[in-house]
Image (cartoon, rainbow, N blue to C red; front, side, top):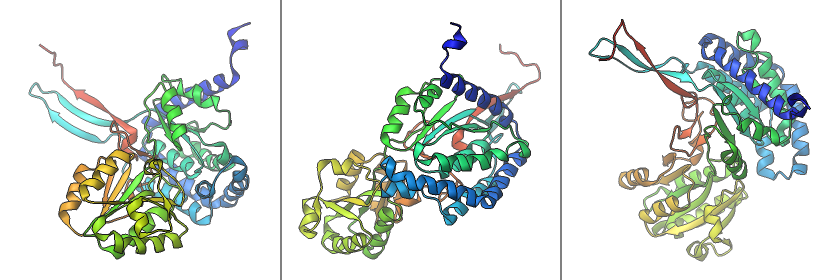
Length: 425
């Protein structure tokens, strides 16, 4: 048999997709900002015009969700409605309004020998995005990749396939009319998991892999990828209520951090309360949280104040529930809170609630997380909320990007040197 006869058809398909993405990335790297912004605005209009088509596809996914074992939080992540669809369309317009990072001069100087030297921001190339359940990621990832000059290969979860296909068709239809390469955005339409492995094994074609989903997905990508991976394993986020906290404000913030959208990675999973205010604060917080359907799991000190709640197990302090469950502990000091967070946290987002500047500064300096928040909800660690526009994920890595990854985080740099005949002695 020939090599062609022996070839795995799926491997061949993935290789061809990656080749097209690589070629498209070269065109995107030199595409004018006006073309990229025009595509973003065109796509926003098209999402609004074709909303019925998108919502009908999403309804099929939502109906099939329980059959895939999705819980209520996962169904919420999957579900689109007119309000969420409008937010998706608006996010495209927000990205279009952001400065184009490609070509930005980071530093420039003239050397003593007359060389003009500059460090310039350039695209990475091809980004392979693997994600679960959330169809808005199809749009967010495409927008940020294209605006930053990168080609995108997208692979969503099987539970969102109809929604992803509908959104992808809207995005793809606008590329060529906007003057961009038609293969700048591609969607892996097969649900065969082998496709992910094939693409992760192509470092000559794919420059960066970004998994966005559960810990098992991320660990699989890290294990198989032969190119760099931008990742976070879990979002085990904490809120610490200090002895000098405004308790009414603290109740409001804790409820928002846990219950506003419990299935997302920046939702709080553990509440720590200073012993000096625990007896007053915990009943207030418990009433407000339980009114939102939150199950509390407490340590001995917490259950002495809230005897009706479930006892926390050791694993609860390390768990990202992504659900209406909150572990609650009482600590003797700020130092104990910081030690607990650094021991059990995932380096994602952690918050302190206090009216005193000294503990706030100590918390910010000593908690080793991608985002540290003072007197606000953990839910603000988000690209849009921090002014980045849509994000492609929140990284807990320390190299090369940390926190919400927007346009600049999908670029690298190039040194450009202009001379007039200089040679090195």
